Length: 410
Image 1 (tube, rainbow, N blue to C red):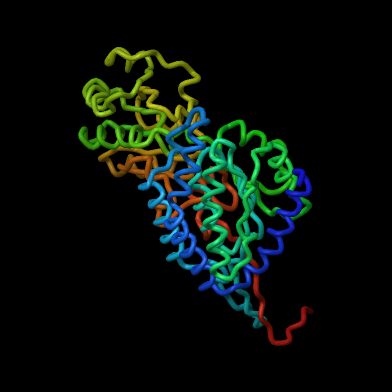
Image 2: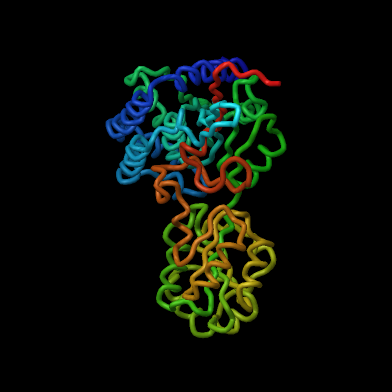
């Protein structure tokens, strides 16, 4: 089958399955997600074999792509956690009675059909499937070619799980080709089948989606995340938090890419922080280079999402300059302050306009699982509909249910 009829068939199947999924009992959606975890564990060897084939030909970002037994089990556990979450479909958000006696309720509803386009992250296949089933949405997955065999193997487990739970396998579909034309067709909406597109990848993907999409987009931009060390920070805490924020996993979008530090404490704190960072390349402004023997940073470093053991370092005069720097160079993802002064910390949390702001915690906690969502479909960096980790609740819209007793409007 050529790409156009294939994609049209996928779109039609998703639209039909979305109705079945939104109208089935919550317990059936739970059963389906539990079966996904079970099938993934049963098929772990097949998934790892497929991942090995992907790794043989992959270039770059291998840490994001690589799976092992522990990572497959972690994916399965995240599915177990999603299955245990409250089902949002039909949840009453608010309810009130008007003076004329009309009873009005705001109730959560699924969005419909989600199109997910992602790169080099096979775990997204399972996370997105579970979150969409939990929220009553059908999903069309389009994996990057680097992770395609891994994603197809994971999808095979999901498809079996849906059948086991008595749901249409078209609730979760994957585009079985790396043909870029498939992305274009999804962005056009597949003849009205797709309600929302979620991109999760690099700037080139996000730019294409922004340029070509003819349906609503839930954006996931780059993670140029900052950690600001205030002059009141506990030195040991500062070193530990910065090291974890940068080096725990350098390839995740919540990794800190720029360290801001008050110049009043930079001479005493920067050497200890640098030591805690270990094998991390530092690029600094003139003042930090006067303290440490590091390379010079330029304007492109302040806006860089390295996704590598590289950290930009800049000294600042205080909170105002730190907030100004984040506003100029940040992408609205995650920012943290290490600080013992509560008033300063609360001012930072209030003034920094990013999806996630943190006090005395590593930016690597910017993760749906760590927020109690079980998993995430991405970190939304826009300001409409959803912001921050996107879990089941964030993939619902709402409708108003009005109950009357024969009222007519004068």
